[in-house]
Length: 436
Ligand code: PMP
Image 1 (cartoon, rainbow, N blue to C red):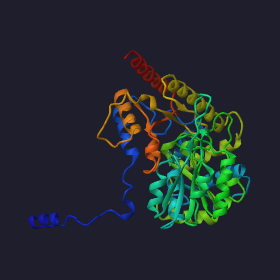
Image 2 (image 1 turned 120 degrees about the horizontal axis):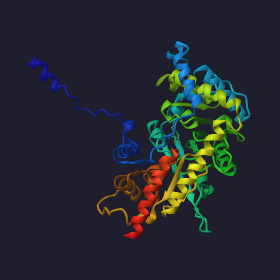
Image 3 (image 1 turned 30 degrees about the horizontal axis):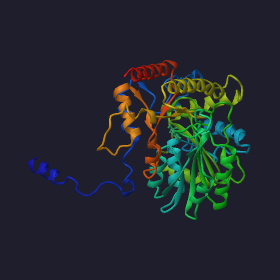
């Protein structure tokens, strides 16, 4: 026994265990800020998920699936449960104006997150460059790096309106010459995220046309993350880049039932695109996760069948949800504007970015810290005010982070009571400021 113990102690590994592809990508904003919010927040407007219930028709579909055909507890088709890929194909045929084969033009994934992972693993090689528009959903960068690619960043640049009005996410724009300068013979793909997390920007037809033109000119792929496709406000229109001239053949469009039906915990996502691209995504998928929970896919299929029947009608969830969210956006805009935390009005998504440059005197100085102001502010705010939000510089590359440290991101997909509680915190804060 003693001999065995000392042997096992000596056998402790000393060689490096981490694969080289993980070097430099171990930090993750969500691990830290989700924990901070769980520990300190009274009102959590940080991570992006609704605190209101999903629609009854969807939870009812799930319950029916649970108690119905017992085969729904078993494996289904690897690349997507047949009823779900079928209805997704029907739905996207309408949206993209082209025929789709459910078996080859659609694949179901474990959330949009795994769809992204499949895209980068399947399409990006060692040495390839991938253009990422800043600010960006933070996982794009490590996913490109894990695939051996090199991210190349191009920022949306803010153009403040001159008339003293609040800024809109539409005021953040690409510089066409700067964007063009990022394309080279090494460029394999560009990642587009419209509506954009964190800004809520909905790219215009002109902006998408410019991106499409550059993709065609340089023979580049487009990974189009459209998870907020239904969350569009003020009568704006969501334009799918895959529907523009020359783009279908080179575009993978990504969606998420989590965002579409307010069920982020179900982790059902999908990709739509040409077979010549999706065949390689299927290779990654079948050799990594294989498939997504059958019951969740069945319920999402039924949700889409309902939405297909009610398409464009007032009872459609895709019509109702954005209406409700627009109201919530406007409440939060008002609360923030009232205390001088200037909001940038989002055209889409359930996020809102606000300017915190007026609050520098509230946050204690940290002369020896190289932590950006927005990180220090967000941490201080959750600890001392109980309100959680996410620093905007988390959505920038290391090289550009320091140019965008005066903003934080709030999620407004929350119950009226939650937004009211946030407003109470902000108003009280304002009173303390004016009386001190
Ligand atoms: N893309 C963007 C832009 C997102 O904001 C998110 C979720 N925050 C995802 C993808 C991941 O979606 P899912 O939860 O379906 O994996």
